[in-house]
Length: 357
Image (cartoon, rainbow, N blue to C red):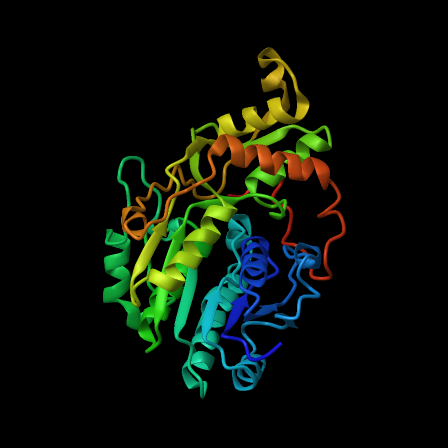
């Protein structure tokens, strides 16, 4: 094949969202070269990319986003036109237990990547940083848009990226907020996205939906943190990918875009739905498959955001909650051993049966 029209670097491309993005790019754009840089941490699986690993427009580098020599090699040997930066630690429990690893990957990794892109002979035309709605912090009645208070503080204190304090409840989400600010400090064509809880096939079992499913498949109860009602907004993975690809083409440089579905599901209701779908029990027996466990050190009730800014570009969630959770449950039923064999890198310490977001 001749020269590729575009060369795209995806960091964290073997993770849950990253692998779906890579597959979409490789299959949807055979005239683009797609480069995946991933350290293959515990929450990644090479099996996520089996369908594209032999494609001529796909290249994989195993490496650390914090390693400047690896990044310099990639930028010097390939004319990177687009960067999708997804490499990050996201497991909330681990952010309390091992905050230094979050600081290293989420902030220093982002800084190292930005510096490599800035000094590259061929600078990227777009740099999309995939962040989270958690940077706004939790709220019971306030709906966050891109100009909410957390964003204003982010822009006015960007010179101390990584050290500022946001409303964000966990150390991990606070560091993601620091990385947001860091991206805005560099003279690069950056676009930032902040997504709801993305879910779907191939997500690691540390996250709440696949964790509940694994517990039920093993004939264990769903473990629910605390008794205070909590809810999350869920976005199916294909809708998230559609948003990222739309913003690549239509997003404005220097802007932040919320990516949310408006689908808010209480965690208790989520567990009850999954019990019915997996165990096929009558309503009277559903609660027998639920177990309440101690709460986290910090409790986040909900993360409401509005995505009107993105919707004005033509995006809208296409997969309903009913269809998305049906597809997800079916995939885990069809692939019960997908996460049985963990990669070499060990997962964080067990959270005592507590599901992560």
